[in-house]
Image 1: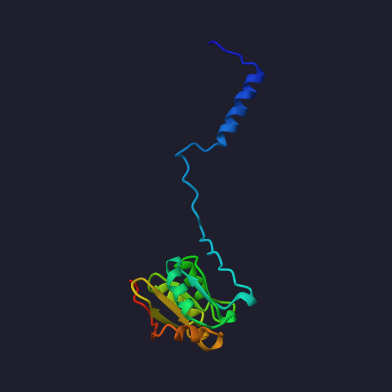
Image 2: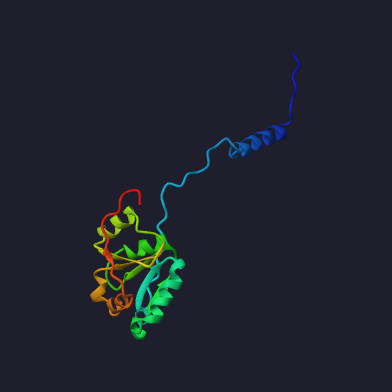
Length: 173
């Protein structure tokens, strides 16, 4: 039997290499990490009290519609409508979070409210009325803000159209 003797230094180097490679992940050997929790949506910033006016959130696609309605409305600087256009879904999240001056008065949407959004609104005590401005152009107004927030009722009245109370949408909508 033939024996080979290796210097002690090369044996230590081989063990170090094995230890380093043991900590490496080879492509395809480990599944990718899974996200375990959904991140909360970004909050829609509350306007400062002096610039609040009528607070509208929602779809940038309705900026023209809101701007036209605001141009016809002569409510003064304290009740000027402001659209924070961060998207329909973000708008509904902020709108359905609650009632009062810390929450938006209206949401401008390029689609009708979904069943999940309606459920979230109702859970927060929000009742709402839908105004239809044409295909894919809806504005939802909080019923409690019609009389409580200065200018909201007058702005809505300036649209010269009646809204319809929103009831629970079907699951497919």
